[in-house]
Image 1 (tube, rainbow, N blue to C red):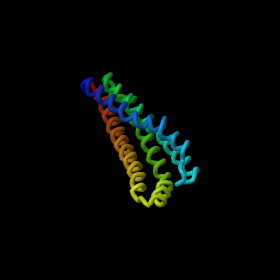
Image 2: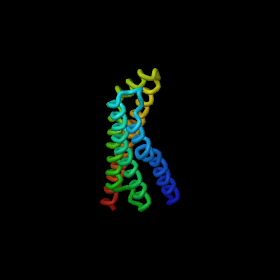
Image 3: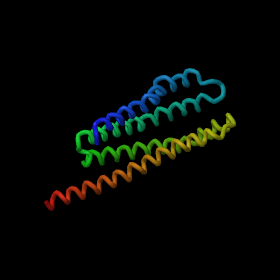
Image 4: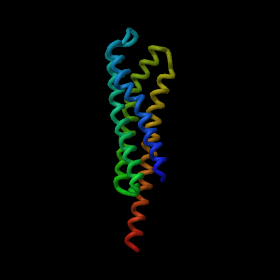
Length: 158
């Protein structure tokens, strides 16, 4: 793979990390400072805690993706390091999805309070998207592991 392609993907990872970082640094603290009168303060704290709790596996998965692209640059994509990176991405995505599934009652409360049923769909979309990413990472991990096994068998026969 050309170095320019992986450079573009690394820049893309940085660009998709910036809005979440801005939300964690600016958006969520503003919600705590001025919770408003629509929701109880405890629900606002739960929403902010969900935001920070999901940011951790999000950034961890982005870091592992960045490392995986580095392995591709160094021509060691077919190694146990790549398998471990995909394994970590899988667990981060499952954690992200699990946190949003657990938070669905919070989304239901917000939807009932605002009379906006689309809020529940947004929570489900985040959970489902993360679950799809986790399954995709698991499939890639299995494929990569099989390719490494085949490569090692071929190295032994030669």
